[in-house]
Length: 195
Image (cartoon, rainbow, N blue to C red; front, top):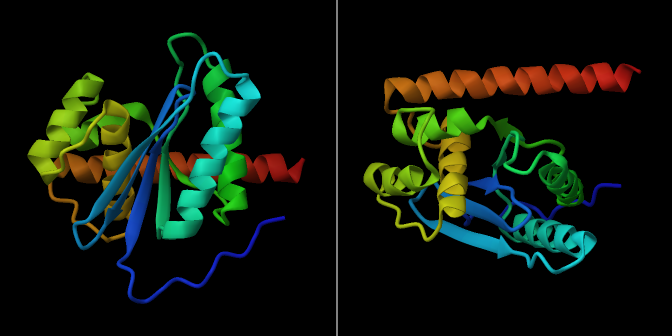
């Protein structure tokens, strides 16, 4: 059962949440239309049992969403991880639980190449490049690549919802790609529900 969130406070500026899931280092960023931002990383120890790591990630995300009430949430779509998709799939499962518990039915998923293109103009760049471009493009000094990815997703979902301008031509291409991915995910959910 989904919990009801507290009413959105009028004195709080509209903000967007981006999350870059990882079992070891989940980055997340809340970016406000007034220019403020909060970026954080959830670190888990590889020596911990898997369940404990997943609970830590889910609990922190739930608490943050309930406290900050973002207008929309974007998460990086699952891609093939260096060591396979099993661990990242389990993190995404824990994330779905966290979203449901926090009252978000489904976030917008962003393909990794779309995220890179939105930040840098190229879908093929290194994680460190995104951190540099986040500073160049939006003036945000970010501590880690995970937080830079999350910050970019927050800006992207904000642009999709009209909270931030889509300033560059490739911004518009990225927004179309996210809308298409969202339509595909919605269609898949409908097929699964019909079974």
